[in-house]
Image 1 (cartoon, rainbow, N blue to C red):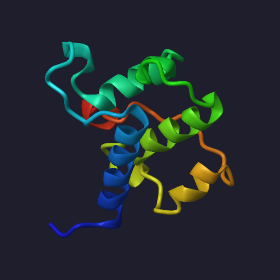
Image 2 (tube, helix red, strand yellow; image 1 turned 90 degrees about the horizontal axis):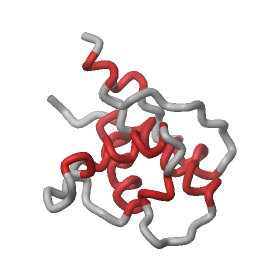
Image 3 (cartoon, rainbow, N blue to C red; image 1 turned 90 degrees about the vertical axis):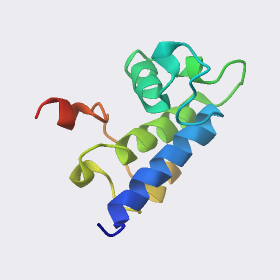
Image 4 (tube, rainbow, N blue to C red; image 1 turned 180 degrees about the vertical axis):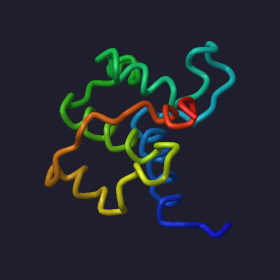
Length: 110
């Protein structure tokens, strides 16, 4: 299948989360519940514990929340749920960002 804009959005979301968390999307050297970055990010997001993703880094909480939320929208398994590449407007704060669903929830309900 050809590469689509929605595939680009997914890739953008993965790279964004990797940059925010300073790690690769899969790291088998970590404990089992932390191996897959997207699962770890979503769990921390829902628990209100985004600080766990950063280690000792100090960052502005609102900016961190915005970047993680945008990343989670971008990596939705269902392409129709992903935003357009105008996602930059979300990062700038020009557009409000609703709470994203679990990125893999679409597949688990099938």
